[in-house]
Image 1 (spheres, rainbow, N blue to C red):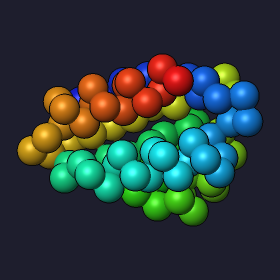
Image 2: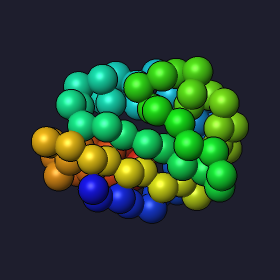
Image 3: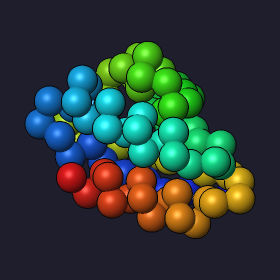
Image 4: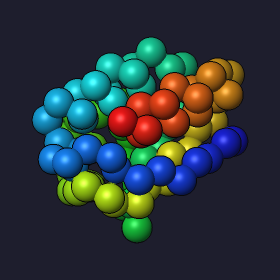
Length: 83
């Protein structure tokens, strides 16, 4: 398992367009992904899960990836969260 710490770089937070883009990226990944904000753990392959986090601009998140393509997945997700 690999994990990274990221900060939400989008002025509107992780809502609507950015959440949809994140789901698209995650759906291409075979590994299990967990997005963590404080005590909330969600699957970012679900837009409802992402939206339920209420992650606004500057929110600190942990991304955990476990599976066959975790190295590539971490790289893609890190690029996404760089804005």
